[in-house]
Each structure stands twice: as structure tokens, then as C-alpha cells.
Amino acid sequence: MSWSDVFSFEDYGALLALMTNSLIAGAALGIVGGLIGVFVMQRDMAFAVHGISELSFAGAAAALLFGGSVVVGSLGGALVAALLIGVLGSRARDRNSIVGVLMPFGLGLGILFLSLYSGRSANRFGLLTGQIVSVSNPDLGWLVLISAFVLVGLIVVWNPLRFESLDPQAAEARGVPTRGLSIVFMILLGAIVAAAVHIIGALLVMALLVTPAAAAMRVSNSPLVVPLLSAGFGLVSAVGGILLAIAGTLPVSPYITTISFAIYLVCRLVALRRERALRIRHEDRGAHTVPAGAAK
Image (cartoon, rainbow, N blue to C red; front, top):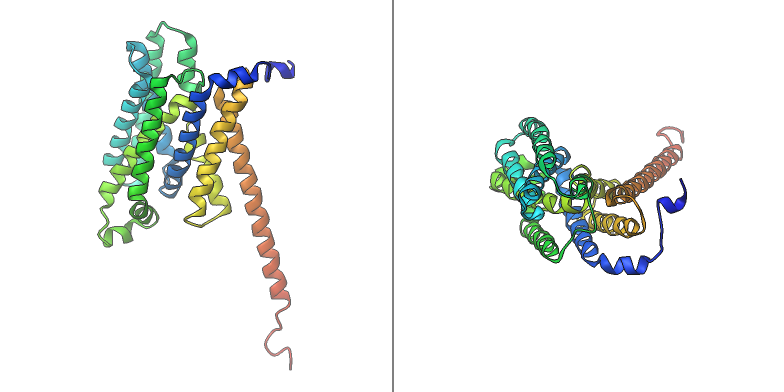
């Protein structure tokens, strides 16, 4: 196996011109996925993201089988899963059990639909691992519209949602409609998961909706810096992965997940160095402190 079996930059410029739709969609999903990922981490819902993606996969597979829009199918499946988790899973224990039930059901249903599908095998494989060559103009319109809808929704509910995510008891005591906010958030999460499935696939969607936010939270606690870093990490992961995949022979998802994971590792190393420096500083400060009575 040679390097050219993984990367080949021949005719890269011509291929890049054909991937404009994919790059636009990837940029939109990376930014919005990074922003909503902050709340996913704060609400401890990384497992729910995977559960939603499985039902989104089932909806997309059904649309592929019956000749409908894959984006619309994945959106329908994701919203059904999100509403079920949001309505029935008010407590973390209930939510995890519901997600645990939905995941195998959605995956099994999706595999059933794909096994009945007699079209191109690349279409079936792409639903699980992502694809960059299938973003048509109508699909791009849907993906950008979904991303814009989620972004506007996040902006509208940002402050109360942040308050409710960090301290739900205090938010409820202050009169914040926590139940309604939870359902709204799940709808927004379901929508962006459905869009992300179309680019990175159902199995690896957390690379855009969890890892960037997890990385950002390792290096900052600022309510402004964390969302900006997370959105930036998501953008770099999605667009960088697509740019590498254009020259590669592998599906797009390994490139996106590798970049996202590398960013997370770097952030962990930065956090470890910072913690070590603070610990050394505190130890030095304690060593130079003169004990009371020592002067006597």
C-alpha cells in the first residue's frame, strides 16, 4: 500500500470546484453543530445525540428505499426521536433508558430498509459513514435552511437555555419554562443531527456535535469563548475533512473524525500544561510563605 492509495492530488483543483455545495454544507453544519454541542455537553446528552442519529439513519434509509428526499427522511426520523427523548426523558435515568431502546430499534429499522434497497451500494454505505459527492442543489438548500433554523433558534433561547442547562432547579424556581425549553432544544438538536448525518454519517455524527464542544471546554470556562472555540473547531473539522477527502480515496468521515479528535487531544494537552503550571505556582507560593511564629 502506497501513499497514493490514500491521497492523490491530481486534478485537485477541478475536483474542488465540484465540491462547492459540500463545502458550504460542511461549514454550516460545523459552525452550528459546534454551538449546539456546548449545550449537549452542559446537559450531559452525548448519548442522546447517538440515539437521535440512529432514528435519523432509519428515516434516511426509508427515503432512499421509497425514492424520497434523504434529507427530509433523516429530518423526520431525527425529530421523532428528539421529541420522544424530550417528552419522555425528563430525568437523566429515563433519558438514557429511552435512548438505549431507540438506538437498536432505529439501527435495525435502517438496516432493514437498506437491505431492501436495490440501488447503488455507495448510497447505502454513505448513510452510515457520510459522503461528499451527493450534496445536490436541493439538498444544499435543505441543509442550509436547517442550519439557519437551528442557529436562529439557539440565539433566541440562548440565555434561558444556558441558565436551565447549568442549574435546572434554580431556573425552574425563577420561573423559567424548563419543560418547554427542553423540548425546544431537542427539536433543534434533532434538526442539526439530521443535517449532519447527510455529511458525516449516522455512526460518527458526534464528531461534529460533541467533540468540538468537549475540546473547547478543556481550555476555557468563559461563556463567550467556549461557544466561539467550539464553532471554530467544528468548522475546521468539517471543512478540513472535506478538503482532505477530495484528494483521498476514503469516505469523508475518517478525515473529519481524525481532525476533530486531534483538536481534542491538543486541547487536553494545553489543559494539562495549564493545570501543571498552576500547581507548580501554588507550590512555590506555599514554599515562600513564612509560617506564623517562624519570625520569632
